[in-house]
Length: 157
Image (cartoon, rainbow, N blue to C red; front, side, top):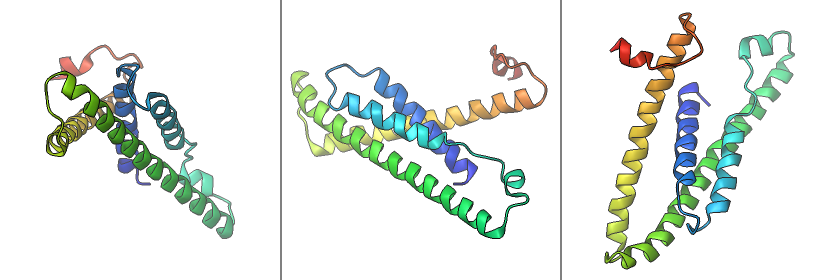
């Protein structure tokens, strides 16, 4: 998986975990969602070694085997992400079918599709902001900054 895609998936997992943590306890499949997101994050955080140093001195067959295993791990992580997203959407659909009528709003598939589009747009915007923030912190640390982050982005502009 390319670093940009890995970062995108990792940010998505973090944002979904944050959403799950603020849901009410009666939310459907809450425990299963927490388990599946934790599994997704473990797959994304599997040990990634620096290729240039890791591959030095290895036989070509060993390099091929290592790359193949890395590809399988990446595929499992991407598939787990799809499973989490599908489970979350099904859970929200089930929750909103029960919740909206209690608030006087009629549930329709069209209204849910509009809600889902807004949710995906919000998650996308959060992901973009998170990637920018992580990039700024990384640049700051690489340029000799301290490991403590005290709002330096506000001072920089």
